[in-house]
Length: 340
Image 1 (cartoon, rainbow, N blue to C red):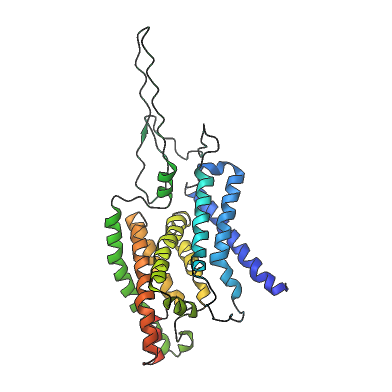
Image 2: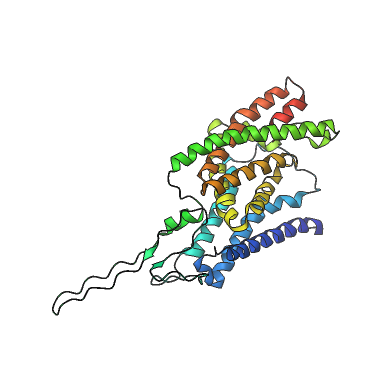
């Protein structure tokens, strides 16, 4: 392997490791370090899992900057491979969660050093900041005195939180009414689509007026065009997978730990492989809208609905329509409508 090719792998890997280290440090600063990370090997392995998926899905495309674009024939790609990155994201988050929250021994569970001493009458545990506050676990009352010869009262069962509940808390999946949040996400998703379309078209027309039309792509990315020609059920599955997995990873997992700006930057970089830098403008705007939506609603369900709706409209309606428009109208108009 030539040195430049090696650097195209090493540098993105280093950036991914740096991002995973920043995630760990910011989680500690915000009081979101899982209790299991008190064991060094658990913390290291969890960070390695996160660094791996960030390298594959976020930073690796940066290594292709300045390199000749590969052939655009995607016909050899099997359909399951389209979901491979999403599978890696799910596996990385699950590994991080289990390493951080699964018990080290069946009879005891590590707890992080508390930042603030809880009140004597209640014990609370810090959870994902977008989840509803955890109900206080009251200390069991002192046992009543029993007379001689009477049976010993059975001990009260320990009040614990299941791993499933912890997982939903950590990813912002706890909501008073999931259907209501999904419905709100659909409505706001339509509004976000209109806002982003108007914003991107305004920026594109301004660039044309200033003589910067070379920065405007004349057609959608080749991969997006190929995906838009796949069977309807495949396109719907891709949209649903992107809405659930990407929002769970970037908004549910990363955002509360590294902040809106950093998680948005990583989300934008994850779409860099499309090969159209100007397309990232619309993606950045969408990401900020979803991030603020999560911050407002304190859960990721509306963002999941909005993201799924956006991708579905793009793959099922907009991109196929743009391709037909490009066959009959000027490429300029078609590009402004659908390249992003």
